[in-house]
Figure 1 (cartoon, helix red, strand yellow):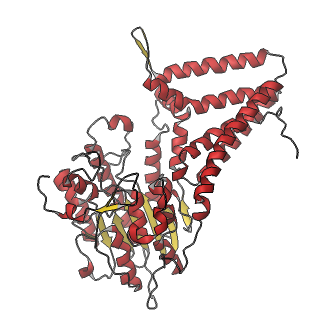
Figure 2 (cartoon, helix red, strand yellow):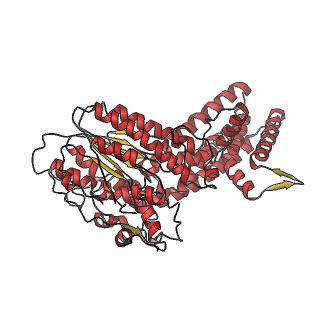
Figure 3 (cartoon, helix red, strand yellow):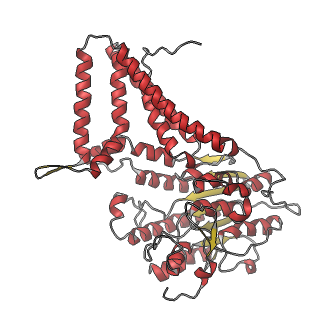
Amino acid sequence: MKKINLTFPFHPFLLAFSPILFFYAADINQLLPNVLIVPLLITFLAVGLLFLILYLIFKNKEKVSLWLSVFILIFFAHGQAQGFLKINQIVIGKLVISENKLIFVLWFILLGAVTVLFLKTRKKLYSTVKFFNIVGLILIAFSLFQIFSYEFKHQKVFSSQKSYDSETNYNLPVPTQEISEKPDIYYFILDRYSSNKTLKNTYHYDNAAFTEFLQDKGFYVTESSFANYENTPLSLSSSLNLDYIQALDEEVAKNPTSFEDGLYDLLNNHRAGNFLKSLGYTYYHLGSWWQSTNQNMSADYNLRPMDEFTIKLLDQTILPSVLMQASKVFHFKNYYNISSVHYAIALEQFQKIAEISHQNSPKFILAHILLPHPPYVFNENCNRIYELQADIEKKDTLPYYLNQLTCTNQKLETLINVITSNSETQPIIILQADEGSYPIVNPVNQTYEMSGNETLREKFGIFSAYYFPNFDRSLFYSDISPVNSLRLVFDYYFKTGTKVLPDKSYLSQGKDHLFEFIDITDRLTAEEQPD
């Protein structure tokens, strides 16, 4: 077996890859390896290009590689150093040194000293290169050991590829007669869009204009819908698989360390998509930056926005700080942060859905739209706001939430008009929140279970509206919950016999009992009175 040549300068690649793998390993229970592809590929190309350019200038691969490794360490260490100095503030006399200014000075001094040292030295640097190579290999080995140990224990990569056959309880619904018409189906998940009751009684916001717009279009808007679960992973896993989590799969509850870990299969190989694809539908998946809906392996088309892993990874580098400082000097506002990504993805989703509405039918469009979910990036006129989320959270966030909700309504009105005008046959459109707003007016008392009924109603009350062409409207009722939305569609239009289930709401019992639930339906529907 040929030995690795440790004097060849490959360490810049190792030192650039190691933070990415380390960051992935630290959050592996909520991720799949596919999130590594883009960051590793871009990093490989960037390091390779920088190495080539510097080598063409200085003609010394050892010096170039060492300088590049120092630069890479600075690039990835910035976030940690910034966090340290934010906690451990440095004061010299009456001068308080901000973490950004101090770190940039330190990095400039370090990189300048290294540059001068490498330019002046005439020594062979093979031993230094060898040392950096060994350090890089150790760092890579440490992360890979964690990753492969986790995979060996959980077999997550392989289990996520499983297909549900006829012997499982994931049996797809079966139409009982020939289907003559297959209307397009638009299923919009509006994250944290609170119910009209919550908006009116708790937030003192009148949502009548949007409600009336929908009703004039032919939508049925529910009055008393509640989420089936308190968070997105549970709610979407349930609604997309047409059943409660407790009834879906015993495997879900086998030693999961997070909701995403236990529910990944249900979110990415769901009953609704598989059933509609079996009928000849084209499945368009428009995910969010949240990892579990960022893309869907079963979909025919994925809008793949920047995912949460990449965003958090970039947040740890020097790039956001550089762009922020540059924006102050050159007076531009389009610097990178999570808010900018949130803003860009929302606009892209609405644009892509409008474009898809022109595509051939039948089609199923599932869009997880993270609005009015924070960060708050839209004002009431849908103009971009540039306040940092951290600054907003120090204030009363309710006005920001309501402004973003107002903008969401405007975007939806425009989109619905486009969809209905572009459709040859009337489409099915479902607008539905997966959960209500995080309680703003009635704070959580340690846990939801220990909180009052008003807090639970604020969290579980959700907006729901249905546009079902040629539907028997007597089948609608005021408290339809997400678990029954697609059951109604499949039973009425495809004659599958998927009758509605009792509408229930459940609380998970916390991180030590993720899939043990408490029925809180009675607490939500109890007469509203002081708790």
